[in-house]
Length: 237
Image 1: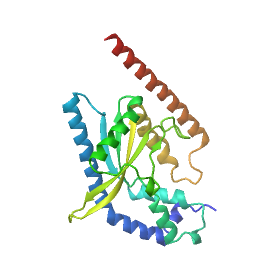
Image 2: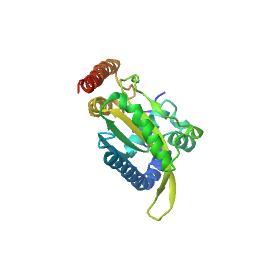
Image 3: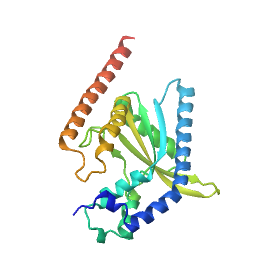
Image 4: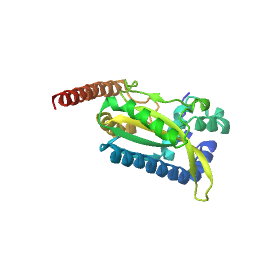
């Protein structure tokens, strides 16, 4: 039995978790501001040293409660309401590893993994943990698409963030890295498809998924053509 979202969000333990999350959200915003600061510093240092851009753009954000709630629902919706209590909600919440994160856009598809390696070295130098396997967290590589056509490299790091009282707390950051073409695909698919079906029990219709994959394949072909053009121009110049 699937619990409708409107019923799920009114479960007492889900409401309790919402109140708790809204209390911690300002700290997550502080954490993502710090992440953006670190990424901007890296970009500026690289530009000064190498006279070129390490990546096209970067941003950072804390996950909204609406997004957290949808993730909880996706993890728990196939149970019975009577079986979803505080323990189940907390376990589902603890398994969400992208409450704080950033996005990086690079020019070319073949730069994605290269920049991931660059970021790992950078955050290691900053004394961040870059191997989170002991927490059950590993990098997610979707470079050759998932079942909906999404392509990206999701890198995870953990480091200390100082709150307003001067106390430090370890925060896990998810950093998504993708090419400019794939960045456009992801930005367009969210309002066009994901936002329309993410709260529906049946999820995204198969025909829409097929169209998303087909479009992603065409964009991947464009990525490949762009890299080929770059390489040929470099040979000719």
